[in-house]
Length: 382
Image (cartoon, rainbow, N blue to C red):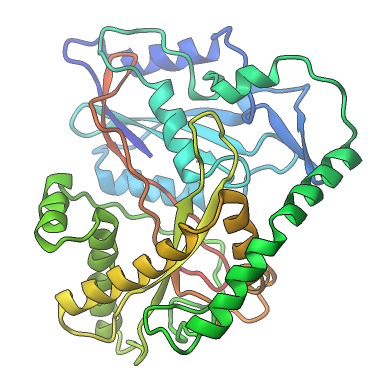
């Protein structure tokens, strides 16, 4: 969810004019925004209709953030039409403080968090003077431009065989790391987090179709000071903040497990900004929620994160992907099947994607805040 400030002295029709400009735009949607699912592959949607994806609404008075979050929660509760490209965009006006919002909903199969953030930065401008900025779904990445260059036709079978070949090439290294994990770390290294140690908690159960979206802001400078003072990463600090909040929440519901909660932390494997596909693995972090001292929890988090980072530093991106598929594959199947919602490899997902480092604008409107709206599923209710 993007929250924008309407420029000073802008006409009352600023948002309406922006919406009409988008609707009348001659820009053509680019991959992945013009791709729809066809079995195991993506095909271009030859009947793309912007009205199917793009909506404009106004919040009822007084247009508080509370009403905005209720609307986002309602929209987040519905499935995206699988017959069309898997995304929608809502422009929401009438928000207090002379602001408007954009809620962009896109399936994780199309874009991961890091790729999405890079697309966002490319779609916005660095100065308020730049107008007529193209819609997000029309922004070309380096990868999109490469896809426009004609290539020799390759059958889907050849593509699959090529993928299998590349996976087999990394098998020896993956087996070596798996052997070290099994014989040297499992049950022996206290910093190693296995896929079997997450406790049963109230966070892991079947979910309904309803969603509740909440947002909170913290000053990045505050997190940086803590990070520097304690010699840990900002990501460690974020995990520690979440750990403390989760501990207090579960205590208030008399539901704090005796064993520490385990978080799945997505980690990007992308080596350049030209790829908008999914290139992520996962790290399991011990949140130390069984400890009542914040510094103890932070140290447990730091050590468990460092353990995974050291292991992955010995592997290439493809080796990490294959290693993760073997180690975390059963956990993924359990989540997708929903067979054992209370027995999970991790209790929740905590994702920390770096945002823009400088002010950004969209057709003169300053980006005031940016909040990710993630997904829940059976077994992962938070």
